[in-house]
Each structure stands twice: as structure tokens, then as C-alpha cells.
Amino acid sequence: MKQLLLALAFLIGCVALAPSSRAADPVAVSQPTLEQRVADLEAYMNNSGRLADTATNHVASNVPGPGPGHNAWQMTSAALVLFMTLPGLALFYGGLVRRKNVLSVVAQCFYLAGLVTILWFICGYSLVFHPGNPILGGWENALFKGVDSAPNGNYSFWVSQNVFAMYQLMFAIITPALIVGSIAERMKFSAICLFMILWMFVVYFPQAHMVWGIDGMMNGVFNPDAKIHAIDFAGGTVVHMTSGWSALILCLILGKRVGWGRDNFTPHSLALCMVGTGMLWVGWYGFNAGSAVAADVIAANAFTTTTIATAVASFVWPMIEWIVRGKPSVLGFCSGAVAGLVVITPACGFVTPAGAFIIGIVAGVIPWFFCYKVKLWFGYDDALDTFGVHAIGGTIGALLTGVFTRNAANPNLSINLKKYVTDSCFQPLVFEQIKAIAVTLLIAIVGTVVIAYVVKAVVGLRPSREEELTGLDLSDHGEEAYHG
Amino acid sequence: MKKVEAIIKPFKLDDVKDALREVGVEGMTVLEAKGFGRQKGHTEIYRGSEYTVDLLPKIKLEIIIADAKLEDVVNAIVRSAKTGKIGDGKVFVSTIDEVIRIRTEDHGEKAI
Image 1 (cartoon, rainbow over the protein chains, first blue to last red):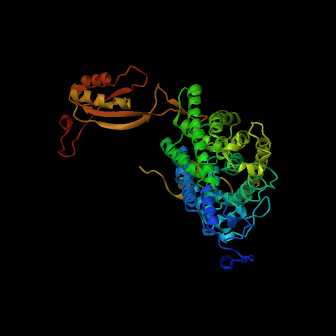
Image 2 (cartoon, each protein chain N blue to C red; image 1 turned 90 degrees about the vertical axis):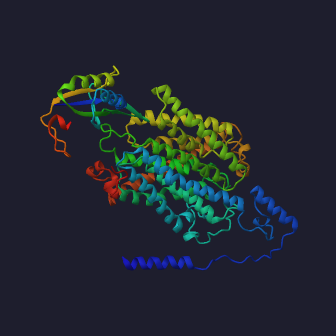
Image 3 (cartoon, chains in turn red, brown; image 1 turned 60 degrees about the vertical axis):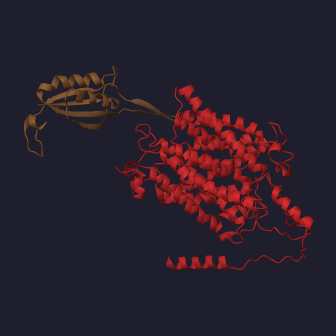
């Protein structure tokens, strides 16, 4: 075992230290004229390419590096998205479980922050964002080879590639962390550790490449050869559908918590839950507006639509409760806000504020219906409603993106999607979105079934009945959140 | 000597304390308690799930008094703790054989 590890370390070292294989440009490059230099500055202002970025112009640029403004916003956004997981989601979920399990949820979120960063560095970033085939990217950026402060023109002319990689890493961290919500309080830590490693490779990396990779088969905005001309601005399919549907499958395979339907599963602290929700909303601006990968007009619009849809949904959900149940609950305000954020996610950079308003109303109604009614009808133990909010929210978000995307909201739509976005509610884009939804469902459901049974065979999924009744804080981590 | 134990609604504690002080009670023990009687609990709804919370928070008072004060004390508690609604609580009276003050080793009513 020791020798194997040494050999592995040596191998990794060799790859990391290998000299860069970039060939020198054979064509002579001329110095830019004053006019060309001004054009490059304008390109920075407009978030478009420098003259040097187009293959036909063999001219150098005096501003070859990242643009400070765009880079600043992207680093801020990356930090905001990490803040969504640590501590936002950890508190949102942690407050909703019983006091004997709050640390287990926190530990699972923290574990993912570390694990996914390691996977991302080793090969995750490369498999998602380096060109490869339509389903999975290549290995050339493994161990962050070539990922430095220079921009990667495939994704941004003005944001450093390492900043872009860090920003996308935060998405890869929060996505599996969302799954934790439906399986809370009853999956042992070792099983979660193994499940998540496999899930990143089987579900997340391919899905993210298909939707966001420059040669991905569902990247309708930037890949003219995409098989499905779908769009997903900030992760309705990549983040919320994959995690949400996987969460449902995993919770069905796991079975219900001990005492379900008999014991009291009331949240141990709605105050923590509310604090976490507030952090999620704030962090989500990095998630959504940051997905423009620039501080440009598209980011500005995404910021606005995100606010409107979220505010409307956080209003609608508790109002429905007030009418149906007689009291508007704090959990209702929190759930509505998160549902609004989820549903607007794929749409935020493509729809106008008016579209966002309607999306907000739908987000307050349909996820509510699934959490209040459908869950009871079918009796699955989706502990913290990852399925009701994220799977359902992500799916209707992807669909409504097809309905409400308008050319006025995003100039990039005119690059490859002229035929699909005709500014009407039944535009051809809707059918492309349905195809993308189908592909996402397939990869999430089949992938999770396979992984779950593999993990079950290798380490088992659930703690013993006694450990579960004691609480995972003590049985998995040997700690308690509250003393006295 | 008598021991008076009273289960009351938590928000009535200050009223009961004041009323007892007025009738000359100089000390008491207060416990935070949980329980249920005829009031039963209430239901809480979290998203789709309804839970019955049947153990409600209550305050339990323990007071040791001389026999002569019993009627005043019980009246003071009943008067000050009453809201007229279900869940107001109960008063239990029992006889105490001996009381000892640890500091002075006084016995009996002197030690109360």
C-alpha cells in the first residue's frame, strides 16, 4: 500500500512538473497601433474579445491579461457561492434537523468543500471545462496544468482562468451538498463519503460539461454544434435537477428514518434555518449574477431578475400557508425564498424582469404543492425537502427558461439561437429545454441508482438502529452541538 | 408544616410570586417542568408534516409553610394563577414531617 502511494505521488509530481507544451506562434505578431489599443480598451468595457483574440488578426495586445473589474466581480462571486455552502446551506439544513443531528449535516457540507476541491484540482475542472467530446471534457487541464491567471477565451476574455476555475469549483461543492437534505439524519458518514466521490464523476462532471463545456452537447448558447440547443444560465439542470432527483432516488433506496410517522421530527432551530436562508439569498447573487462571468449588462439583468423572482416566491409561499393552514410560517418564508432562487437560476440571465415576476409566482406555488401535498400522498421521507424544492424547482425552472427567454435580455442569444428564441411563449427553445430535462433526469436517476447499490454493497448505507436513535453527531463524529 | 406544590402557566410566575410575597411567604423553589393534563398539547406544522407537541412547558413551585398559613397561600396561588382557561394547572398540598436549616441546624417551623 505504501509503495503504491509513493508511486502515485511520483506520478502526480511528474505530470505537474512537466514543461508546458504550448508551441510558439509561428506567425509574426505586429505591435498594435493607437487605434487598436483603444479598441482593446473598449473591448474590456464591453466584455468582448481583444483584436488579438481573433485568429485572423495577428496583432499583440497591451492588455493581454485579465480585466481588473471583471476579475474583481468574479472573485467576489466565487466567495459568495462558497458562503452559500459554508455556512449558508449548513445552517439552513442544520436548523431543520433534530438537535442530535445538526453536526452531522455541518460535517457533510464541510467534507464536500474539501473533497470536491481535491477532485476539481486533480481532474474535475479539466473534465468539465477542457474541450473533449460532447459528453465529457478532456484531461489536459488535470492538476490545473495551464490554469493560470491568463483568461481562457472559451469562457471569458477578461476573467483569469484560475479565478473561473475557483468560481466553478464552488458550484461543484454546493451541488452534492444539496443532496444531504433529503437523506439527512439517516445515512452514515462513510457511505456519504464514498457516494459523493462516485456521484461527482458519474453525474456532475458529465452533466456540467454537457451544459457548460464549450463543446458540450447541451450548450446551446456557445456551441453551434450542440445536439440539444438548450440553455441553463446558472445551473437549473446542472445543479438543482441533478442534486434534487438524485436526492429523491437516494432517499427512496435508503428508506425512511427510524420513527417516521410516529416520532417528533420538528426542526430544532428555525432561527438557524432563517439565518442560513438569508445567507443563501445573499450568496445566490454570486451564483446567478456571477454566472455572466463578467461585470456586464447580463450580470446586471441576472441580479435584477434573481431579486424579483425570489422576493415574489418568498411572499407567495407563506401567503398560501396563511390561506390554507391559517398561519404564515417562518419556514414558509424561508422555503419560498429558496424555491424562488432555485427556479430563477437557469433563467436569470435570459429573461426580463417581467418574466422573473411570473417565475416567482410559479416558484411559490408548485414547490409548495410538492412539499405539502405530494410528499404526504406518496409518503417518501425527503427529510428536508431537497426533492420538493430543488428537483421540482430546477425542472420547472428549466422549462420556464424555455418559455420566458427573450432576446432583449441577453445579446449572446443571437450567436447560435436565433432560430430557437423567437420571443414568444411557445418558441422552439421550449422543446430543446424539454430534451435537456429528459437527458438530465436520465443521468441523475440511473447514475444514482447504480452508485447507491455499489455503496450499499461496499460499506452499507445506514447506521445501526441504535446509532440512528442516538443521533449521528455522537455516533459518526463523537461530538454534540449543544451542551447543558 | 405543609408543602404546597403548584403547577402553573409559565407566564403567570411573576403574578404568583408577588401574591405569595404579599401573604408573607419568604422562600420558594421554582422548577421548569414539562407535562400534560386535560389541556393536551398543540399541533405544529412544518411544511407538509404535522406534529403533536403533547408535553407543554410549565412551572412547578414548591413552598414549605406553617400550617396556619395554608389557606392564605393556597388562595393566593389560585387567585393569581387563574386565567379561567384550560391548562391553568393544579395545587397539591401535603404534610411535612421535619425541616432543618443547614446553617444553624434549627428544626421545625423556626427553620422555614
